[in-house]
Image (cartoon, rainbow, N blue to C red; front, side, top):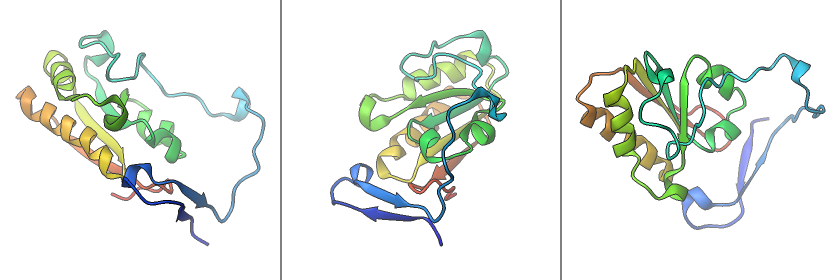
Length: 158
């Protein structure tokens, strides 16, 4: 059986309460660093609002700009997205700030090799994508970039 999201109430699509029913949920084991899973995070801080405009880790970096919720929704986030990338995260709905100026400065002031945007399918996540696109445009640089959208059920949509 497929995963199924059940809507509990209406409202802003990004704020709808949903229960995601999964066909098989693996039994949880106690947290352990011996499971072979290792963090792939290469930088700190990760919040766009807190990140410096210039830092040594930005030089030659493949930049990952991810919506906060994506790492919780997508099970293999570290392996599939954070690995070998410098990670910046934010939520345009909660932060209520235009990230484009800060992202423009990061892209302009550093040797960024590529940009990957990972967002949720909800409309409010469009703000993160738009800010990143604007930053790429305003930087005057031609950098390869892509957008990956994660569904509320944790699957990649596009």
